[in-house]
Length: 312
Image (cartoon, rainbow, N blue to C red):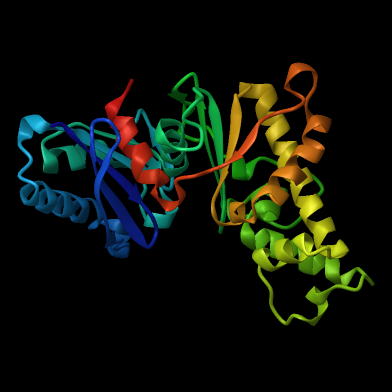
């Protein structure tokens, strides 16, 4: 039996998974992400957790194919993190440092890339070879896989979909320092912000006006229930996403877009809003587009990280 470890490093926890070579998940668990001292302990903590698991399962050296890692930042050559602000990292050669601790091959890429790989391997996009994964949550992440290959780019910033400009007239700054980013509109916080701004300028009757605080889920639920104002906000969101996806299509022409993250739990109402506007930003044979919801949830990262080390 051959084994692979899949590791998804987040700002709060590190998710770890032990897989058989065919993608069967043997075990998954989490450890805290210790970000103090510039994240100096994260790699050693991962190494210690995996060594303990290796011993518990009595995995021999020749049984371990390697470990794949997803991190929330830019990565060069599947090895070195160029920058990872959420972890406190600057340039860190994760592959070399973790490889020395484990004595096996290690490959590293952006966390959205591994999520995309996971969905392509055993998830919603398993029937495709080219897919763009977009995660809509606290932020907006993206991973691009074309003909089975990750699009990283020369600086590791390939697939930073959340920071595509979708409104050049915007003056509000994104966390990245730019203005007009998709993340300002399509993240869970962005959806709420834009809706509150629209409420202030609207005379529409909507239950949202009576709510002291509300979430993106509340907006979608009201839209599903027939609230016209909430439905308009979902429509605006769909247009912003369609604009970004149309530009992506005319750059890499994926077979399918996979929508994940907490906002994707809204379901078909979100997909329908994207589809309504998508054709306005594309042309010819790609005007229809394919959009599906991710199926692996929070496990997509560990599956994709394992697929990263497995290769073709």
